[in-house]
Amino acid sequence: MKIKTILTSTIILLSSITLSAAPFAEVDSLRHAFGRESVNSSKNTGTPYADTLDTGNPGVKVVLYSNGTWAYKRDPAVLAKEKVFNEYWDTNITNPYRDDTKAPEDLHLWIVDTLDSYCCPNKTTPSSGYGYRHGRRHTGIDLPYPKGTPVYATFDGKVRLSDYVGGYGNLVIIRHANGLETFYGHLSERKVIPGQWVQAGEVIGLGGSTGRSTGPHLHFETRYRGYSIDPSWLIDFETGALRHRMLHIRGWYFNPSQRYVQSVDDEDAILEGDEKARIEAEEKAKKLAQERERAAQAAIKYHTVRSGDTLSKIAVKYHTTVRNICRLNGIKETTTLQIGRKLRVR
Ligand SMILES: [Zn+2]
Image 1 (tube, protein in one colour):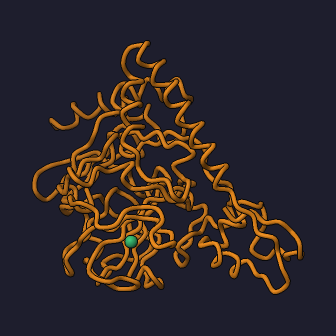
Image 2 (cartoon, protein in one colour):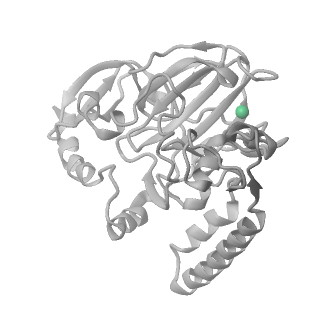
């Protein structure tokens, strides 16, 4: 078997790139090797399987497609046993991580490694961006999407939810092996069921305008442990390319109003260059972070609890969510509010 010989040599490399967080030094060297590579969108992997072959690694299979191409894939039977597909797994609620109120800190996430593939949701200029609009939080971005157009899974993963959910309308949520979840909202039709394994490029539904929507578009979200980040940190929707194989997600990306910032991306690129540029970029980044911290401090707002106040009433008043208030104050949704208590609302 010709394929086999090419395979065994690469498998050794593959097995050293695990999905779990590696020590930083190791991560950095991998990042230098190919973490900064961008990845072009591919729909090829949406083609049906023809056959699978075993490799030297029990968790990896060779998948032969009906169009004659092949790829390495993780074996779903092995993946299914991983923590990420078992903990906080709920096929009914959009955010099963609700009780985990600690926002994630800096992390390096392999968005795709050599085993994964990627398919851009839609190569287009987003019609509505991430962050706040009209005082309402927008946890994803909107992509123009004609009704009935196939919607593809962005990465390989397992469907966690496929249901009609309030404002989202017909919603599909896919969880990926790196812990990331992608949301696809306002679909006219859902084509997958919870628990189903999907590959990047596989059709999961059709574009539409169900739920709170004023016209056909795809509402696309990227979340990590329930916390959303602007999908533009991952994907350049203008070109359709995935920006990097490995993404350095900084803690402040999870700030509800934080949109993708081009300059940060550039600084990261400079960090890969010479030492002088690296130091300069670090200084610049530090200053930027301090300014952001100052701006964040200035934006902090408190509310003094009065008789009749409930968390949801307060949330509405300050254009925020009960969950955010709980997170900011380290309280639960069920906590009794004492009159006179100062609650941080922003
Ligand atoms: Zn939207």
